[in-house]
Length: 102
Image (cartoon, rainbow, N blue to C red; front, side, top):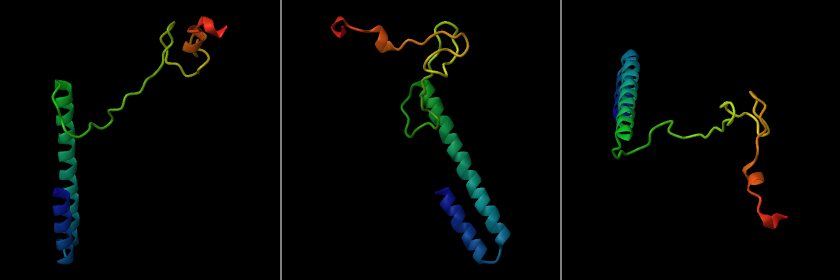
């Protein structure tokens, strides 16, 4: 809403012959929008850390899962062996063979 009002004011000022004022008003409206968006993000983060309910989503809150070597603890880059210590990676399916298989 603030950004919309700032843009409307800058268009009005631009039409009245003051292009510098229009540019500064547009830039100021953008800075206000950015400030309030960042404050809202901080409030969401604080609420999430405190265990409170919050609306919206926290940016960058996706979780990735990185596999690590059980021998040396290095992050695995390959599906076959550890790049640091050379340990062979065993697939979970290979460990859990049942007696019906064979």
